[in-house]
Image (cartoon, rainbow, N blue to C red; front, side):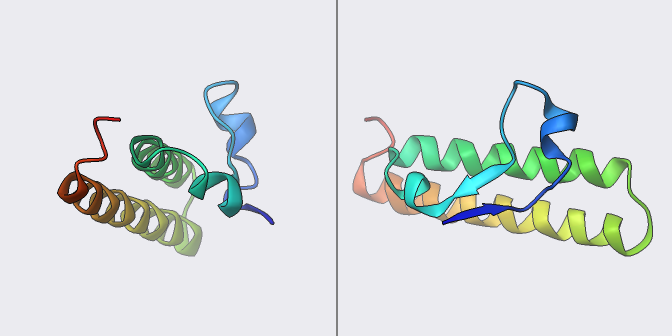
Length: 86
């Protein structure tokens, strides 16, 4: 299953990262990589918000906030398990 949260993300980010998000691939990465991916998506949403206005700006900022929340929760959970160092 593929989900692209940010349709213009590839043009904005270039080769740095893809805005494509595949949940099955996400769960098949290490916990540390998951946290990194969430933080990358938050940065992307914030950058997209900079060029947006009105509801789109608000929505991109909310997406960024949610990606940060997910990253923080994953980080706390995996640190509790001692998995981030792997």
